[in-house]
Length: 307
Image (cartoon, rainbow, N blue to C red; front, side, top):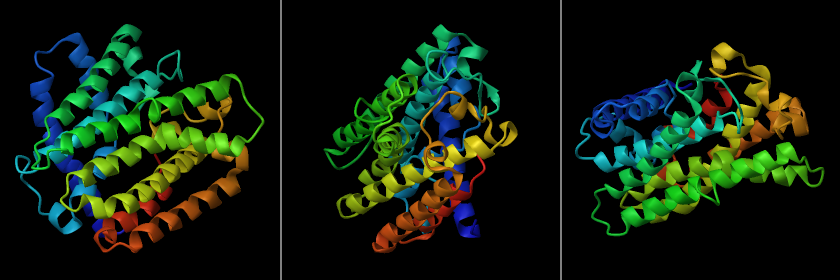
C-alpha cells in the first residue's frame, strides 16, 4: 500500500475515533445495559471503513492530513458516525440465530452471545434510529443538505437497499433458484453490501460545495467499490482464517449462500476482482477533483486486504 494512502487511512480513522470517543460519552449517557450493548458492538475494533469513505469524500487528501478541528467540520463526523451506527446495527442483527447465526464478530463474541438475543435486537434498533437522529443535527448553509442526507442513508440502508439485499440473500439460501444466478448474485450484493457503501461516499460528498459536479462519477465509483468489497469478502471467506478475519470462515459455503467463488470458481472470482479494481481507477482518473491518492489507491487496497 502506498505510503501516502496509508497515512490517509490512518489519519481518517484517528480523526473518526477521536470524535467517536468524545461524542458517544454524551449520547450513551447514563450507562445502562442497552448502552453497554451498543458501545460493545460499536467499539469492537472495526476498520471504520465506511466512516473513512464519508470523511474522504468530503476532504481533499492534503486538507485531511492537516485536519484537527472537529468543531469546524462536525457535520462530516456526525455523518460518519451515522453510517457506522447503521452498519453496526446491521451486523448485530445479521449475527442473530434467525439470520446468519454467528457467535464471533471481529474476534469477539457477537452481541447476542455477550448479552442476550433480546438485548442485541434492541441495541440494533437503537443504533438504527440513532443514525437518522445524527443526520438531523448536520449544520450546513445548504437548506436541503439534511433532507438529502437522510434520503441518501435511507436509500442505502432501507427497503430498497441493504435490507432488501439481506432479504434476497435469505430467500436465495432457503429457496435456491437455478435461473439467472449471475443476475441474482449481482442484485443481492449491490444492495446488501454496495448500497451502504455508496451512501457513505455520497454523504461526505453532499456536504461539499461542489457536490453536484462530482456526484454522478462518485456514485458509479462507489458502486464499483461495493462490488469489489463483496467479491473480496467472498474470496476471503474461502481462503481466510479466523485470526485474520475476526469471524468464522467458510460459513457461506456451509450455508449454501450464493457467492462469487461458488458461482464462478475461484480463478474467475479473482479475475472479476481485478477487473473491478481497474474499472474503479478508470472512473476517478477522468475527474480532476477525484483524481487523487485516496480514490486511486483505495481499489487495490480493498482487493489486497486480508480481513
